[in-house]
Length: 278
Image 1 (cartoon, helix red, strand yellow):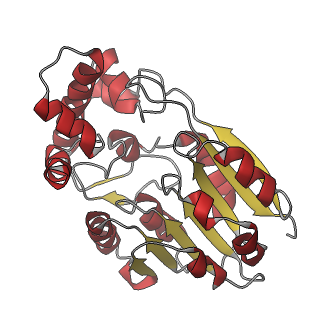
Image 2 (cartoon, one colour):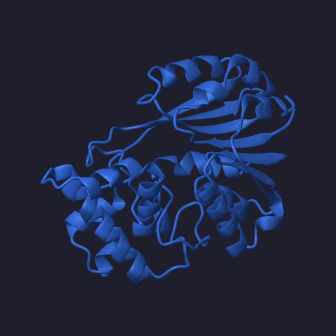
Image 3 (cartoon, helix red, strand yellow):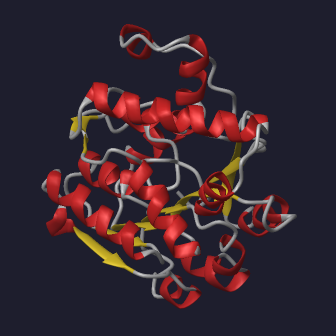
């Protein structure tokens, strides 16, 4: 049942986690969250049809990257096309991308938006993408192929502390991490000793592992400068969406990355860690 719901989620082009799709399919209800979920799914599908895919990212750090999918992998689709996805991070991400690195690593790469975007911006860089989901790895492979980036990308299953310990303390590595709470297993005092020259952008999941933000901030602060970024609401308007004829309520759903309470979600934090030794 779980696998079927997951397949249906992808087929429908929904950004919902698969258990929520199962809920939609198995329960007749007038619950407002379910109604909003259905409205978001319909708006995403309409946006995908109107914008046409493949299409280039319209703005932001990865402007010009070709996005070949009709839906994102368990995240918000339209903000990625519009270029406002996780825009709280754009300034810090641009600063990170101005630096030179020996290697980049994307842990929890999903459909490869960040992995391909980084390779698109850093034309000499190699990147290792990790994701435990087979569909995600397949999508990462496709977005790299469409953007002619495959020769600098290596795709793997789960990343482990052992993988991070292969990094030499003097190696400059850019690490992007979004692994649903597993960051607590990956980043320990022992593994961070290998990351003294590395820069990291970590999505924090206190909702899964309470205390994540404090624990990682405490251990990274010994060797890295830290910036903590909080998620923000997106508003209900965007010029392109308005041009395409979406209402304000539809634009609010399309711009939402589900960190704003609209679907019962909660705000999230990211940790930016850069070496003190630089």
